[in-house]
Image (cartoon, rainbow, N blue to C red; front, side, top):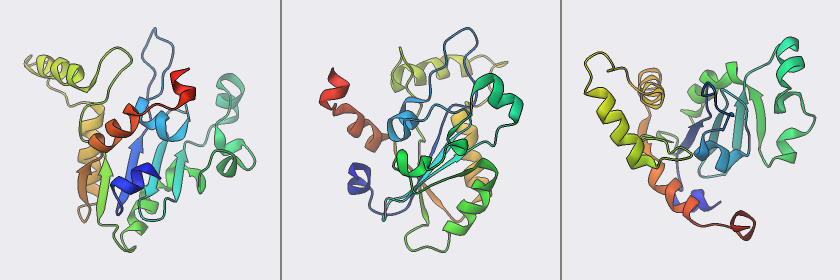
Length: 182
């Protein structure tokens, strides 16, 4: 609701982490986790800013993945209602879902994170500096995962105008509830 007050139209797309960092206990992307509380790899949140309808897209896991790593919310009965989402859908439906959004009023605006992500021990500025230093090396000029995501969104959906949701996220995440302070 607070995000909707700051950006009253368009579609928000936030991506969860796609790979755990080797040798470190897994930690979900902080912006994604803030809005969903979900720790699944390769998850995507799509929210309609006008209505607040939130749709979580999760990978469909194989029985082996479920047995060894545990299931995700796709396997939980009434998970959407339990976690305050409109729907929880398989990840393979995301591309069509975003394509269908084109026809809804105010949907030509796509909010996503265009700035660097923050990490456990590094803020967005620290991450930007580290990326700039890495890019100075002619053999390490590959884009970040977030940059690739934005490029892919722009390529697949050229009719959307992308806007950086990061300033809104940062303002919201600065305010802590009593539970977070505790």
